[in-house]
Length: 355
Ligand code: PMP
Image (cartoon, rainbow, N blue to C red; front, side, top):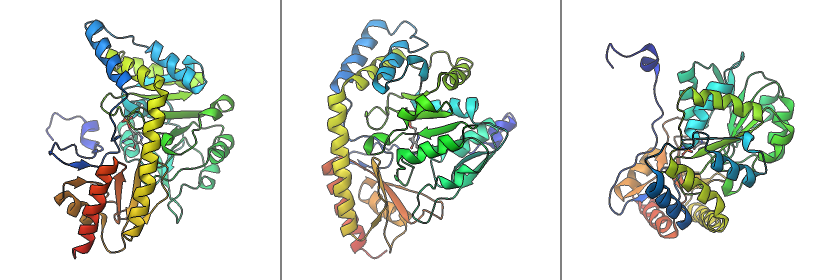
């Protein structure tokens, strides 16, 4: 810190994502990336976009990408907003929609970026506890004021809510914007996008980072009523008029269009998740029911920190959390079969070694 820092910079404690070390042979299961490369069509689209037109500014409105996303989700292009990863889409959402007269509500164990954005944009917030089974309980949000943001599936638990519960929420809270962060929806949850037609207060945020294996390209998007999208666009235009470069727009279009590759890779991840869950249970873990590309699991005899440190010594990275309510857990990204075999072998070794 220095005396040149603004009051805003002094007050911020930023979200620190999982580490990205480059150690040969490392099994990296800490940041929920896809174990598969992106579709070959994506690589080809990026290559030709880069070769032909990189000297030119990109389309500031990402028109073609928004058309492709609109068609994919059965909405109009005016109902689609795109940004540099869903983190940026969320940042614009917080600025444009989530500062309301009453505090913003979100679950008390959830994506840890939300309080960071509240700080950044001066948004008061209140958290709503999960229930005893670590589920989001919609009934707790119905009689309160304020905007709402909930990830579905929630992070880092991986537990999903049925679409009917989201419908109950958006119907009961018509005066408030309700944002559903669907970063992990493609791994087994129901998207709330079909509810948008009848619910002008609903905004759904998705990403190409997980199920489309494009975390490195940084493309996320929001879908909602045209008036909500207009608010996001105003904020974006005041911030960065060219959020997505040409390679990102071209790669994202190809990723959405290659349905076959998407289906193949996401079903492989779901199958790997089910077999990892069974292996973890055999090793004595308690595993929350996941609809995401990760599992959240705890062992009765070891803390999350101890397990992740022991795994790290065996060149396997997983995530643990310091929050005492979840410090017993590790979050394991669903990798490839060989990666998960390495993980379970390493875990069996750690469990056999007294801690
Ligand atoms: N929402 C949730 C719940 C997440 O876990 C993540 C990934 N860290 C994101 C949004 C952001 O993902 P991205 O910016 O890569 O789209």
